[in-house]
Image (cartoon, rainbow, N blue to C red):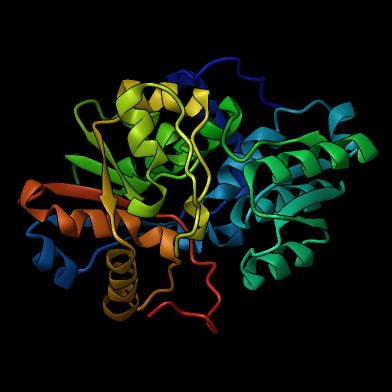
Length: 320
């Protein structure tokens, strides 16, 4: 069992987390693409979390948080709310531990993610896709089952787990990275990536990509408080949530900037990876590459790490 974290993880705590979750996750490969390097005018290293267990980096945070629960807390199962990838992570962790999982999912979650959660044996409860409805339904499920709630990102244990992707990328890239980029939704991955760079690659700047249509993280980064979106409709379904105080605190301290991209730029970058790298990624995953391509003049000649966050896409509803 890992200790519970009341603040952002230290370097030693990140190392302990990486060791503890290793039976639950893959050490995913880092790939390169000469054609994308030529487009960017930079050297790019893609950390392929689309090859992770459950098809997304979220397995890291889910396992990290579950391993911080006591045996008595685990016995009644795990619960969460998620549009898909975190739901799969919690369901998979519960299955591996031999305990039940109770997942609240929005009614418009991608079918491929719903079916995957069902495949891990979790009980799914659907709700309208608003933060308020998700939370209200989650509270009803927890009251009924007594299950332990694992938040998708507002949890220092989850953040520590997500940090391990960048920790591996820093080790696997051929030499020091100038920049590491990832998408931002709730901020768990971005906060974890920022901590990993801070401790294990000082001097490496961390940048995030975010859809223009859900630019709450960009606005929160500027204002210093958690901002909300009036509308969360974006092709990048994994990035529809807002930051939390925990993630925003780490992001404002350790992240260089957040770059916004349009829906078309997201779709074009997704298609580019499918066509040039011959791998499946979901729309949320392509956001940092879209941002890099949009601002390639600012990245010229640099060594860039990009975390490809997941590949759980409905191939019957491709956006391109």
